[in-house]
Length: 445
Ligand code: SF4
Ligand code: SF4
Image 1 (cartoon, rainbow, N blue to C red):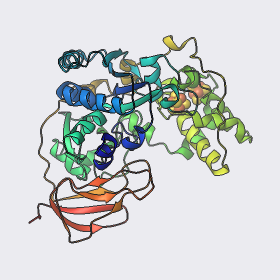
Image 2 (cartoon, rainbow, N blue to C red; image 1 turned 90 degrees about the horizontal axis):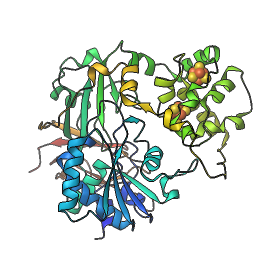
Image 3 (tube, rainbow, N blue to C red; image 1 turned 45 degrees about the vertical axis):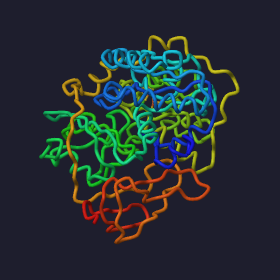
């Protein structure tokens, strides 16, 4: 089997959060393969530790992906502050004889250094045009855990586990490997938090992750972490403001200072995203939706809402509101045909991670979350058929059927973009709905 089919069979998707099927991403040819090891979300500690603990596998996965797309260079982007990981990677790249192909570039410690388009610019000085993807400028970006999963697939293992950081206002933050389909509540409990009801939980990083309505969900392949904070914490209160409430507050309070625009990472790359204009349209009830198509250029990094706005307003949420309105009307932003040029002030307007962490009230919780071995043996797992971008997988097992760990339980629908789904344990299928498969663990005979 060639690598693309190996990746496809292993059900690999982008582990950085978006969940795009990796085999589809690697069908194109590009000049560079970039490894996103920036991990710019505060408190998350997955990629930086994987790079240090599994350098050979990640380097080999990256190299294999790079050769597949015929990239002439593979570049690992990792923040310069992760000195131990960088030293290990340098040593292993040389030992593997890949110094001529794989290069390490140290990233500055700002938010959002891991935004795909920001990363492309930091590593190659190229600018992805508005509403385009990195491929447009000869780059394909994969995440560190994705490269690790490629390597594991080359050794015969599909994706049945994911790495997560459990952090926040808890005594002992940790990073753990968790079987896909494990109950989130159980993961948090086994990581030492027994008073879960006292917390609100953010799914993913504190900047972009939503506050979970309840924690009765299950871990998926793209889960990256859970941030536990007291319910009255600033971040929880701010993130809990609904779009409608954000609209009402924004209408009356926006002072048009344009800080949201001036510090917007995509605006600084030269794109025409200008959230203050969208806020103005809201305030003055401007009817012409075409003018607000710039909202579609927002990557929802939340920098404007959680850092830039001095009035503590919600420009990102208002962008989302307009994105919805535009989608309803079928309106799509027409990208400028001009070559994008970074704004001259960009260098002075990058948001330092430490200042961001202080601003969102997380300094006290900005601690190590060491990779720790915890054995998760849940009584059952619920494995979602749609953990990725594209069509949901189609179940290929039925209730009562016995399955083995690593066995395919959901396949990609014919002719669709999607990802296969595998069982994370030996067991028996006890439920099969349209969107998930429940496996009773350990009952395989
Ligand atoms: S930063 Fe806040 S107050 Fe200033 S223009 Fe943007 S939304 Fe309005
Ligand atoms: S969330 Fe705000 S800062 Fe981030 S891209 Fe959108 S408008 Fe810009």
